[in-house]
Length: 468
Image (cartoon, rainbow, N blue to C red; front, side, top):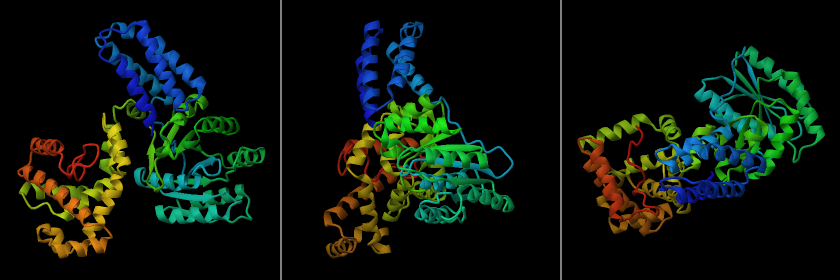
């Protein structure tokens, strides 16, 4: 997300970086570039005008003139104003009421509303420790009810059944009553979508909203539709007392115009980003972290939180202890590292959150590193336990059997063995512990070149136990 905008802004800032002082002309040129970058990112024009004016006022004032490093100060101003434009800080769901707290989901058809209901249920269950019920009030699409039932089972949320011959208001009220009896904390109500905004849709959802009086009314919008996202959000905001926005398909939006425009246009905060199709691909929206990511400064806090949440600490600890004792790093260990990385959204998603690694994350995606890792896992799965523990026993006939069993080529297997060998060498250097040894080993590998994937990433990805 935001890759195009990040690239354009990076080029703009290069022109002013290193200058001893910033003149009015310098600032004007930089602002023209920033304006162009925002236009290309499909940010709404009124939002761009307001943003540029705010940056200009601060940049030509005393704030930059008195700074020891004017160019860095200018970038800091842009970062602050980006954060301000998107809402300053993350706004969590307000569930502080007598249970069950009711959350109503609204949006157009195809925006990912039903999937977002399941993602939100999983998020609240796992991170907020809430007992959640989901219910579909979409009486026009039987498939939507069936889809929500399947997803509810997947995320282990309570599903309240409904049928197409019921009225949406009755469905929602019955679900809330059932949740009270079962002492559940939250009820998430999925509503019908339309292909376009119409009076019938708005009247129905307004009636439902007034009947159940939800504490949160969230508007679900597809980030990929750019400027239209803002217009649709505006229409829903005028019809409903929205409390926030969920921006879906944000992982596929390289421009990011919707994320930058929605808050400024509607005054309603983006509360979550949908970052993929999986039911756990929902992230709280932190404007300050997103601004940092846009400017190529990374998002280390989100990365740390993700590591804490997804990395199997027990396995990571065992591997660290194994390495410190000097025990052999085998192919089972390498496979575990691939799996841990996959749990965190893959190497591209991780690198995107690291300072200065935006371009590298793009290279990783283009090189399909995720696909390469999956292929390597399949190769390892085709080996016997003895072969995984001791790859040196792999003769020509064994290699042929493994590649036939995994549907790969001998060169794929040789590449895996080479990467494993380099990782094992690095692990040896870590014997006895010490981060400095690990970093020296990693630096040597990155400088050595042999078997390195595109973009200069170390073979096998990040060091084992990363973020432990």
